Image (cartoon, rainbow, N blue to C red; front, side, top):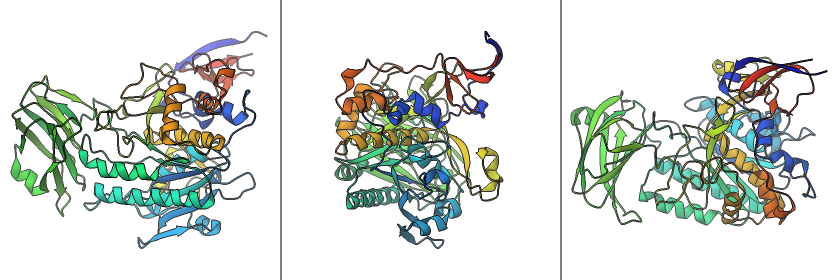
Length: 534
């Protein structure tokens, strides 16, 4: 019998949470051609699921006993954790029962805001079960390193902690003789600051054959909401109306110019009452320009929002990057304001794979997410490197039960343990583990891949949705299957694989059902909700 299609509503949806546009991991695996890798699609001679590869996750907020982190036999796939005890002392655990007994990580229980962020990220990269991640048979190691948001939580502390944990994770992988890919979906932004160089060099020493680091680009790319970068063009004087948000965090302002630039505030008494101010000359940029830094450190009392005007005067044109500061307007008006240089460390480093975020448009097509951070890197290289899908349903139970309304599905009573709950989250934090999990599949096929190998594969096989390379999406959408064929020398065995979303139908959980639904029901296609009748 011929099927009849009736238009119901126009929605950008692929899941039951239609208005939010979240996609299930099934859909993400289809759109990145990871499904073909999991199936061992010809000319592959086997299926790949990440077996024998370590997936490390450095994040904040984890639910260790979530079923997605167990194998089909019910055994925990988390091999080691770095966490803290209730009193803040650090602890390392490898015993599965001891890990399960913790249930939640330190950040979930005692951090500044209870979160499931780390669990969600880990589920995308390496989850199994109902919402299968990219590398569902990989072994997982996890470190909770989120810093409390207080005045002592500096960029320097973050760098020290991050390097320490990356080194420890790499050492663990070496001790068991397996390749490792580490995902970092957290970071700090220093704009075009040359003080990143030492940190960058440390990361270079930690990566190499079978030692890969993937990092989220960040979510400061919406130029209508976040415009931390200013270029004075031909002007040597400018004024910026800015808001210093009332958060107990230090904030840094960077200036780059061929000559001296003087910075002052329109209301110095108010700014000085809220912050201690430090001025510093940094090493010159690669192009020879001088780099200056102004650090505002909040005083003991948490400051309220501070409205001020930054006045800049130089003998030559200049650029400014203001971290964690809202630039509301600039004069002269023809100075450039944008979200350039917002890729968060360590993503800008040459040997780290930086990941941007594609989201669904109102017509159901993939497009650059407005919030995804832009490059270039501080030394002028194209960043991010590649893009994945960042509006995803994955594992995660909020310890804070006030957030239980954000849970999409649960197989337990809401608010009681929540042993198997699933939520949708959005951002480059979610796109990054998708790439990390895909790289785990590639490492299964060739454990000696280097960061340079990975970047070459990405640039050759990703599917551009716009002109590439560029400083927003890098090489385009990652293609797990095309990349694996390239690694195995099978790229010529098949015509190039293309990404299609035009004629695909999805059920209301975001699972692809093909171009012709075989049963009556409600489906989503081309961003619209439709009903298929007998």
